[in-house]
Amino acid sequence: MSTPVPVCLADYEALAQGVLGVPEAAYLFGGAADEITLRANRTAFDEMALVPRVLRDLRGGNTAVTLFGDRYSVPILVAPLAYQKLFHPAGEIATAQAAAAMETGFVLSTLASTSIEAAAGAGEGAPQWFQLYLQPERAQTLHLLRRAEAAGYRAIVVTVDAPINGLRNREMRTGFRLPDGIRAVNLGPTSGPMMPMHGDPIFDRLLASAPRTADIAWLRQNTKLPILIKGILHADDAEDALALGVDGVIVSNHGGRTLDTAIPGVLTLEAVARKVAGRVPVLLDGGIRRGTDIVKALALGASAVLVGRPVAAALAVGGAQSAAHALRLLAEECAAAMALCGLRTPDMITRAAVITATARPLP
Ligand SMILES: Cc1cc2nc3c(=O)[nH]c(=O)nc-3n(C[C@H](O)[C@H](O)[C@H](O)COP(=O)(O)O)c2cc1C
Image 1 (spheres, helix red, strand yellow):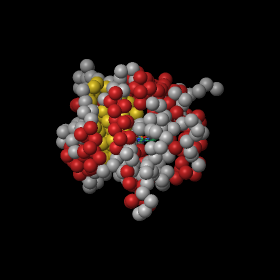
Image 2 (cartoon, rainbow, N blue to C red):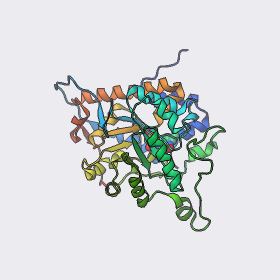
Image 3 (cartoon, rainbow, N blue to C red):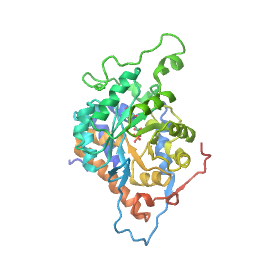
Image 4 (cartoon, protein in one colour):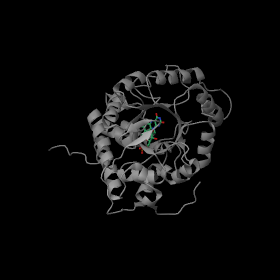
């Protein structure tokens, strides 16, 4: 029997379930608690309708966008995903190669299982971004930042929505743990949080090194690279981030992996984008599986989207080649959706392209 050829990202996700071990699949595909947010990230897109337009001259159209001076052939970036060697021995090297080949963006996680320098090398001069988790000691954070700058990363993505681990029950039931030999190689062996001994276990101990306003202000003073804040779901938080001098915001609920029942990013995107009012780019992730999702996100104010689990799923199925193929499928779907909506370029995508099914109060 021949292996079915994947024709969309869902096919890769289904195939990966058969390739990965049960704990690894639970780690990749799971979300927090009852996975209500994980599912809602998808249904939010499905409940929105695109508005096709006809008879327009679309010759010369393309899907390319420019972010911080760099060109991307489609408004897609590979989201930062920890420990990619769990999914394929080539790990982040393969994903970086795939992104470079498809001219999409690529964001390397602080918790990568590949060194900052090796992942940069695999990107073949393509623009890559580094996702930064603030470390317990500022000297450790600065060390990561300097390595990312030296390796040529083009922007710093500071993730602020996961100060404590989400309770991912699906993963916990499988007893998932990192296998020997796979670890966050860019962090020193002693860089676990230094927890104070007293106080409330969550508010005083686990959150002792959670990112705060002053940390972002400090970071701003310490790098000239564009800084994006990842994990924004409220327009006022976006405004606060802008006041600190950041260069972009990523609307995200961490793929439904932290706070279950949190609002899907795409439902708050419009409010955030309205508040930001074009001052900096707004990006979105969570549940992007189709080119139509990308058009919807851009219609609601995003400049680009990030894609997480499906890229790792394709990586598991067939390494760099499959990851590139998955990105190609998404890029082709994006072009087709734009064309059928009569949109020649991403900057022609306006609010009129999408109808949201339910009117909700915007936060
Ligand atoms: C297995 C896995 C690992 C992740 N690791 C990180 C990480 O290290 N840093 C981070 O900022 N986000 C991390 N995320 C969140 C993603 O960057 C992204 O927000 C999310 O996956 C987008 O949703 P999607 O998977 O539905 O596309 C991770 C997500 C998954 C599924």
